[in-house]
Length: 292
Ligand SMILES: CCCCCCCCCC/C=C/CC(=O)SCCNC(=O)CCNC(=O)[C@H](O)C(C)(C)COP(=O)(O)OP(=O)(O)OC[C@H]1O[C@@H](n2cnc3c(N)ncnc32)[C@H](O)[C@@H]1OP(=O)(O)O
Image (tube, rainbow, N blue to C red; front, top):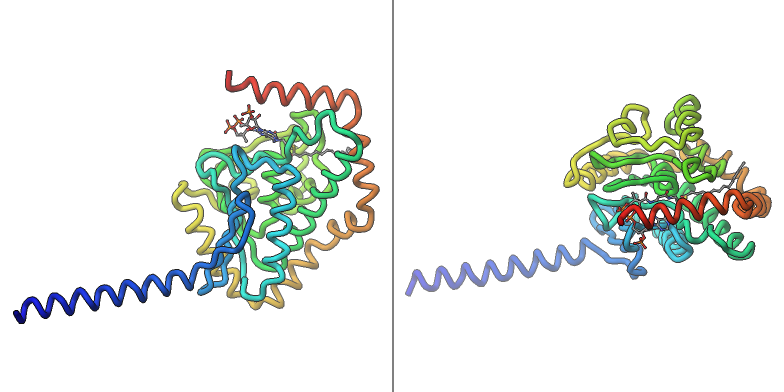
C-alpha cells in the first residue's frame, strides 16, 4: 500500500510538472498572427523572432511574398518586446530564396512592373533599415534577390554545399545599384566587381572565403549557430547598435529614398527593352526545361 501511495504521488507530481512545463513553453513561444507564407515565432524569454519564409516551391519574391515580408519586418521593428530576428526558409536543405519572381518581369505592362519595383524598393528599405540585430540562417540556395536579402542582414550563417551570389548578368539583367552596394559592403569593391560583372554564383565555401557569408555549417547547425550569434549581438548596448547600423547604411538608402520614382522609371525602361525581354523569356524557359 505504501509503495502504491509513493508511486501515485510520483505520478501526480510528474503530471503537475509537465503541466507547468507546458505552460512555461507555451508562454515562451508566441506565434505572431501571420500569413502562412511568412511564419513568425517570437520567443518571449529572449525576444528573438524567427521569420520563416514559406512560399512554395522556392520562396521566389512575388508581390505577395514581398509585401508579407515587408509588413512582418515593419511589425517586428515596432514591437518593443522583440530584441532581434533570424531570417530563414521552410525549405531547408533546398532553397533559402530564388530571388525576385522572374514571371513578374516577363511580358508585363509598365504599370505592373512599376508596382512590382515599388514593392522591391519597400522590401529593401525595410529589411536594410531594420533597426535590431538580424541574422540570416541561409539553409539553401540563395541566388540573386535571395542573396541580396541575406546581405541585408547583419550576419550570415550558411549551410554547406549550396550556392549564393548576385548572378543577375547571367540572366541578361543587371543588379540594381542598391543590390550592388550590399555586395560591396560585404566583400569589398574588387570581389564585388568580379562577382557582379560575371554573374558569379559562389559555393558556400567560396562565399566564406571572400566574406560573402560569415560561417558555413552543416544543415542542423544553421539555426542554432544563428541563434548563438544573435544572443551575442543583442548584448551590445542597443541604442548604440541601432545608431551605428543606421549611419553605416544610410547613404545608399537615402539615394534610393530621394528618387524612388526615377528608380522605378529606370527599371521599367530597362526591363521593357526587347533584348532584355528576350533574355528573361529564354531564361524562364530554360528553368522550366531543366527538370525534363
Ligand atoms: C544600368 C542598368 C540598370 C538596371 C536596373 C534594373 C535592372 C533589373 C533588376 C532585376 C533584378 C533582379 C534580381 C533577381 O532576383 S532576378 C531572379 C533570378 N532568380 C534566379 O535566377 C533563380 C532561378 N532559380 C533557380 O536557380 C532554382 O530554382 C533554385 C533556386 C536553385 C532551386 O532549384 P530547384 O531545383 O529546387 O527548383 P526548380 O528550379 O525546379 O524551381 C521550382 C519551380 O520554381 C520556378 N522558379 C524558380 N526560380 C524562380 C524565380 N526566381 N521566379 C519565378 N519562378 C521561379 C521554376 O521555374 C520551377 O517552376 P515549375 O515547377 O513550374 O517548372
